Amino acid sequence: PSLRFNWNTDTSLHFEQDNQIPFGGCHHQKVVVIDDLLAFCGGLDITRGRWDTSEHLTNNPYRTEQGSSTPRPHHDMQMAVSGP
Image (cartoon, rainbow, N blue to C red; front, side, top):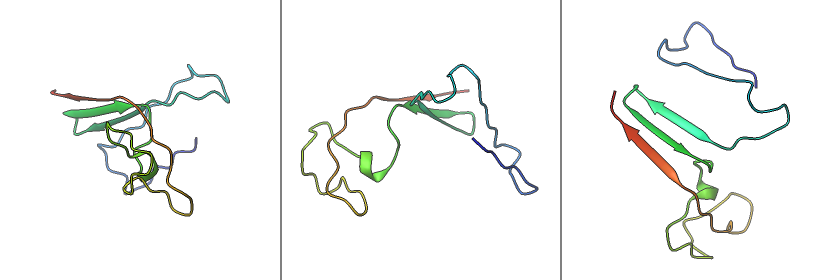
């Protein structure tokens, strides 16, 4: 991926990449760290089309994706960690 930094990139924003996954491979783990105090980790994209509840209702009107029918239910795990 191409990353762009410029004069207005905040100094607290850091990008880390590694070479452990072969080119063309895919590791679907998403990690978000906020102010070095709170982190979230999971497998699915955090987006409207992946939204779901524990009931996994087939036609939940809140699970939407622009320009298509209602996306299928998803089951994923997310983890939250807090502390320094």
